[in-house]
Length: 406
Ligand SMILES: Cc1cc2nc3c(=O)[nH]c(=O)nc-3n(C[C@H](O)[C@H](O)[C@H](O)COP(=O)(O)OP(=O)(O)OC[C@H]3O[C@@H](n4cnc5c(N)ncnc54)[C@H](O)[C@@H]3O)c2cc1C
Image 1 (cartoon, protein in one colour):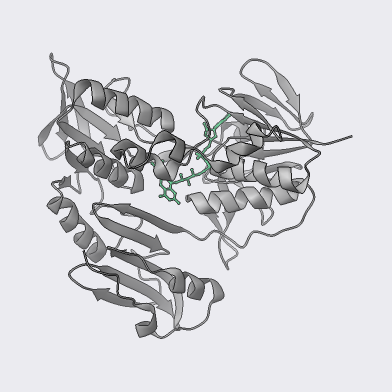
Image 2 (cartoon, helix red, strand yellow):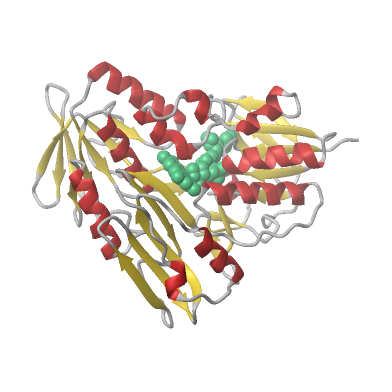
């Protein structure tokens, strides 16, 4: 009798798991369930879709071919509402029950809208997270031709959102409650470098401050109040103020969580037999460490999906550990960050190289690369990544590369 595998979530982790299972066990029955109605797409391309650099077909994932070729069943716009871990079945929002031999939870995260009066249920407040969000934003921009926007939060998606709005000729103000932009991925000097470029592109930045109230005028426009007393007029707001893991199924099913995420081992196994987790909903082994780490990048989610697929069909292929390299491009610059670049852990030495056009930083421990930061017109982190993975010692000069000119 062929086995039935079920995957919840059809994004980076879920779709790479699905594709791998079709290769490893083509005779198995495979069902992928997605709460979204859109064809699975790449979140990393969403900002480019808003700015018009990428068209919709370029945003869709190549792995959707497993559905087109009939190798897996795609249940779109269906939400799993419960997992019965004892009976090994899931229940969908239409009451349908589906039994599984092995289950992968790849439910990712959802954007968090801060509990600020005036932010909830306003048609001028947008999240910047899903293709649905982007289609709503695109349609709104096309219909209302907004001139001014406020972006709350300057993590990766906040900065990408600001960049995409600038493409539409919209005057953007970013509000960041921490000291500088991209606080999780930049040090002070790197932020200073990037912020200067953002201002050159016309962006207004207010750091060290929070939004206290969003007021709606009689004309429908917005006034954003800050804790400093400042007020900013806006036609729309993008809320990019963090995410929360979609852990409710695991929580209700009694699957072990830590820091709100599903705890996994090196085979993406959860605490419950035959249930695996991968991607942003999971807490996974860190690289070359006994610690666990959240996963928050697309390539990591894909790799975990592949590892989970192997384990689900009975292979033992260990996950090497999360490699938190965040890379992106905005405001005419490319950006890559890896490791604790905004701190100096004990025993680490820091090497910095700054030019008019670029900023680089490398964290070394006994000549071994432990993290890096690059901002410039080009990126050259292949050698650094290799050095980080192999643990080989390197000479400082060897790892600084010319990053081109603007
Ligand atoms: C705007 C933006 C830009 C980004 N840019 C980059 C980048 O440049 N580089 C990078 O490495 N990373 C980037 N990321 C992060 C990256 O997209 C995530 O790390 C990745 O999407 C995680 O994939 P995942 O499969 O774990 O979950 P997700 O992509 O969050 O997908 C989870 C899916 O599960 C579905 N789901 C949840 N609950 C249920 C349920 N009960 N039933 C059915 N379906 C359910 C959700 O609807 C969703 O479709 C970006 C993220 C955003 C939002």
